Image 1 (cartoon, rainbow, N blue to C red):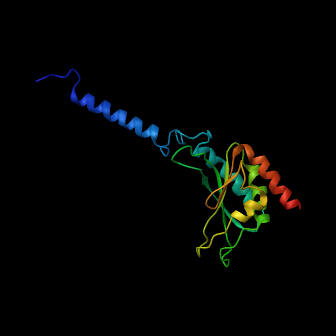
Image 2 (tube, helix red, strand yellow; image 1 turned 135 degrees about the vertical axis):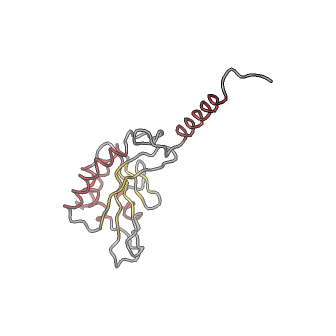
Image 3 (cartoon, helix red, strand yellow; image 1 turned 120 degrees about the vertical axis):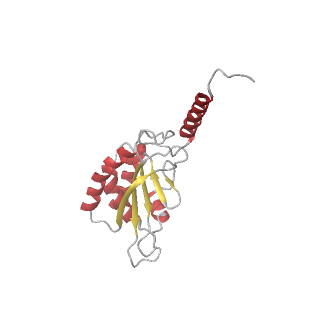
Length: 177
């Protein structure tokens, strides 16, 4: 019988610690300091929460052609979450899968983008109480938000933090035509 110099309890504790460290470091959804360990935006959930009241105030003061609600947006929680402000646009109760008018999307961007800095903005479509949602793609195409550096994916437009000014210019130009 061979005697170990390291007691079994210590080996178990060390092994458990190593496994926990690997899981936390490899999990994109593990939250350290309020953000994913793979997050490249350096934006925490707390940063987004601090930004939402100013955006909500701006939305409340604006006379928009669509209803908008806020959420914490992210591009992917299996890797870099790229946290930011999310705006969900809702269809009117009597609409049946309508296209979002490009002017409505531009009006929302003109209100939201000046209130956000240093983080991406996600504009998506939510579902109204009757299950209806807007089709965002035609409006995004009309504003030029479907091309790089912007992206449209599954009913959501992602505006990178470095392109907020460009998106605002596109929205203002749309409304000025």
